[in-house]
Length: 155
Image (tube, rainbow, N blue to C red; front, side):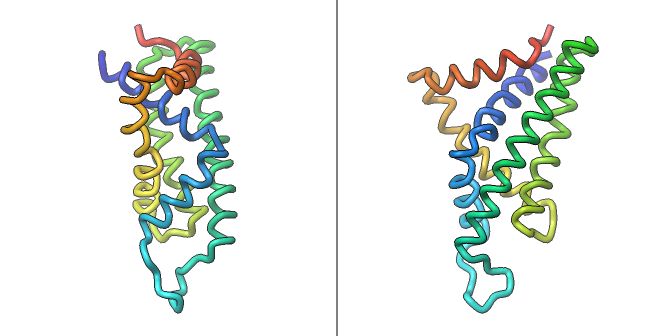
């Protein structure tokens, strides 16, 4: 089925962004600032810049570790346990999105998981820009191809 191939590629693209901590911290900082907007100084939910940078750094580290853990589980199930690869990719994709949203919800002290899901959507928005660029300049495509090589091809 083609949906399994799409999910395999989506996992590789999401991991290509989530595993680069040096890019993640400023990206998470920006996603928080964009999603929250301008907050008055006397508001109790306002976060100082130093605290926000610290939370962004920790969140990017935990998000990278979470991504590597999900890739490892995918590899173990699809290669070692020989579970059908498409089902494994699809199931882990469905588990990765709420896990990553929970990480962002926790580290940015949001009230509900949907705000974390909004942060996650903004966090992975550069994929829409990077994908067409890799069709012309293949440098990022090599990184995605390396990550995709760890995911078993769908039969």
